[in-house]
Length: 338
Image (cartoon, rainbow, N blue to C red; front, side, top):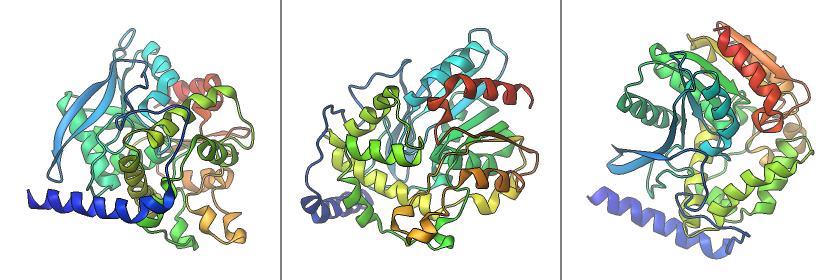
C-alpha cells in the first residue's frame, strides 16, 4: 500500500539524518527488537490485529488464578518498563484469586515496533480494549504504572462501563509540563537523544528521579532489560518508537480530565518521586518545582470523584519494585475495598 511505503521512507529519512551524529549504542547485553533473549516469568502470547493500515501484535501474559475470585486485573507498564517488571505483582494477584493480564503495548518490549505509527493514548487504549474483547473479558480492574497510569486513566475515560476499578501507580501526567513552561522537544531531537541511551544513562536517570539516590542491586535487572533493547539489532526502531511515545506523553496530559472519571479510583504515589518528563529542558527554577509527587498526589485525588490516595512517604517512582511487600499489602487492601 502506498502509505506504508511513505511511512517506511519517512522513517528511513529520519534515521539517516540523525543516526550518524548520535553514534552507536553499546551495552553488555543485547536483545532482539521484540526483546528476544529476555525471559518473561510466564508464557508470552501474541494478539494480532490491524491498526493504521498495518498488521501488528501485542505481546501479553495471561496468568490463571490460584483460586478464582471472579475478577480480572490488567497491568499496564510504564515507558521505561515492560510487562515483565510486574513479575511480583502478577504472583501476588494470582495468589489472591485474580486472573492477571500483563501487556506490552505496541512500540514496547516484546510487541511490534512499527516504522510509521501515530502513537496516542486513545489509540493504545483502543488496542488494549481490542485484546480484552478478543479474550472475552467484559470487565476488569485496570492497574497502570507511570506512563501506564496515564494510559489506564485514558482507558477508564473511554470505556468506563468495562472498568471495575482504576489503580494508578505514580502515573505520569499529574501535571501539564508544557503548560507550566517546559520547552517542547521535536521527535527528531528526541530520537537523537534516545540513540545515546545506555545502561549507565538509564541507571543515572532512575537513580535521580525514581529512587531518591538510593540504588539496590535488584534494580539492575530492569535496567539491563531496557538497555539491551537500545543496544540490540532493532536499536534504531526502538529509539524511534521511544521518541514518538515521549512526544505522546508530553503533549497528551490527562490531568485536565480527571474530574470526568466515573469509576472507583485509587491513586498510589511515592512521595520521593520526582519524575517530570522534559524537566532537563526547563530553567532550573522551574525544574525544581516539577514532579513533586508529594504535592501532586493530594492535589489530584481531590479532582477525581470517588478517589482514594495511598502515599508512601519514603518511596519513589516504582513502589512495586522498591518495596514490594508494602506496596502489595496496600494494593490488595485497596482492591478489596472497592
